[in-house]
Each structure stands twice: as structure tokens, then as C-alpha cells.
Image (tube, rainbow, N blue to C red; front, side, top):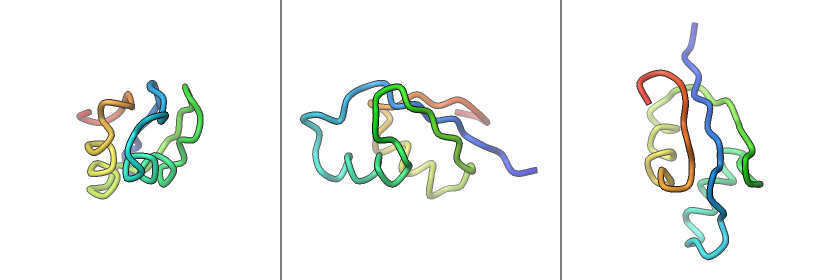
Length: 62
């Protein structure tokens, strides 16, 4: 079974660089406190790392 990560947007995108906004939109996070469940891949881990100060993650080894 593939591992999943639960990612929740806990801080606003307002005032953040456009790169951070694009990463969040790419993960499907558009509103505060929205949670998405994504497959645990190196690509998703890299996206989470870029915006780690804006999101909270739950799942395997996070």
C-alpha cells in the first residue's frame, strides 16, 4: 500500500512570494485549514519542504 501524507494549510498565502503560492496551488491548497491527502513521493516531499512554514503535515516520517 502506498503511503499518504495529510497536508493542511495553517498560514495564509497573503504576502508570500508567487513561487510559494504556485506550490500551494499545485498541491491543491487554496484556503486556510484545507487538508489534502497526497501520495508520499520525493516530489511532494520537496513541495512540502518549500512551504513547510505554511503547512502542517501528518503521515509517514514527517
